[in-house]
Length: 262
Length: 364
Image (cartoon, rainbow over the protein chains, first blue to last red):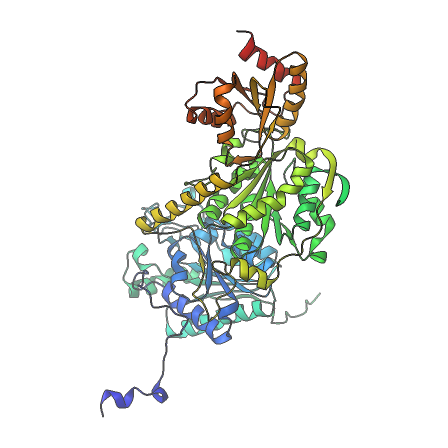
């Protein structure tokens, strides 16, 4: 048996989505962005919405998201992606609009824009990559940096007296009546990747059905910024990030809430 | 003859937007221009023309909503007043860098800082020299009447789409609050999806169909050589705008020995000052720039060799006067160029303008 007996369509177990563009990978080995980009591309393909989807890329490492997924994109100023997405979605209600933002973009400089877009219940998907650090600018402290976590602007670890506490954006977002679906996921194992894909797909389906804001946080690794190996970063994330940023659904309006006792 | 009405400048901005087929307005309240959004909310154009009107959480959000809509080929606008425009300058720079057409209206008030809510023209530099970071220009129109507040909404959009560049209407609290007779245009329907694709289909995010490459709206280019090429392309566009879009009005300049240069509210005051001066035997004319960018350099250069002086009358400490001086310099003339202005929300009186002409040019 030679290799050509194996390479046959009926033996295909994995294929790259045609929406994934062959481009020079600018993300570091071990980074979570690549996995989430792949999931978004696959979901847009599976839902057949390539012609109707407009992505909004942030400022940060994912600014170049538009080089990886073959759809129309707009690149927003730092933190402003939810306002840009509002402008697109309000004037193009037939389009499927999503933002893809990091923690510096969404939780720090863009905290106002994300809260108000979610509070208005804009019919958009928000994908929030939380790796507790500024990746592109070289590993500075983010609002989501853990207490004691060293970064280039908190070299002795985040000090509460100086910098305050890790900001739980997803918990805050879930309190807003405008949001329909709010969940926290990760992509560090095959099982969590499958689960995360289901969550992002559900978010896109919600927007297709015009149900309102669907918000997916992906607790992620930045092994370069954290100065760890990819495997070490995964372990560190499980041990340190998950207790603070607990994975799971925070809100799903599809599920009937039990009637209040009193 | 179109429909005649007595309207405030701010109200007519809203009315003109609906009537010219505008797709969206995003704004945030600020005195003295809040009537723009209030009029739109009262008119409910989403029920008639389908125009979207949304109150944003800030000026920062407003201009980024404009970015999103404009990048999908829509006719989008915002309005604000001086402190709000300062907040928008980040977004305006991105819009210019991404070459998006849109309309920004600045109903100026006195500054700096929170300043005052009374009229001013002290945002001239901010409007015509770019305002935000990087080498860019805004096509800047300066209405001098409620009628022009109406007419320039359509003109500003037309120029913005012609050049894929943001346009600004630079007006002030006096024109915004003033009521005058205005002839309203007939309704132009909003463009259909097909018409938007015809007009903007080569660049806008209208959805990636199988027949074309993906469109990416961005001002980012990491390759410096390509970024320089982008800048050279912008500069070519600005030269083209300077060559083709200068608009001004010349009033009683034929026999004039002294020329007032004034725009907007100041130009109205100057028209009265011309009458008072001529009653005293002083031959005065007025150049009223209608486009502040591109500035009407050529007419000033043409007048410079044969007049005794120019007086730039502005509700500021003297900003446009620098462009008048540049125009005179370009004509290789040494004609005196002076400035007279009031600040802090005070309008100059016609008599003060005549006094300034006399003291700066005649009683020496």
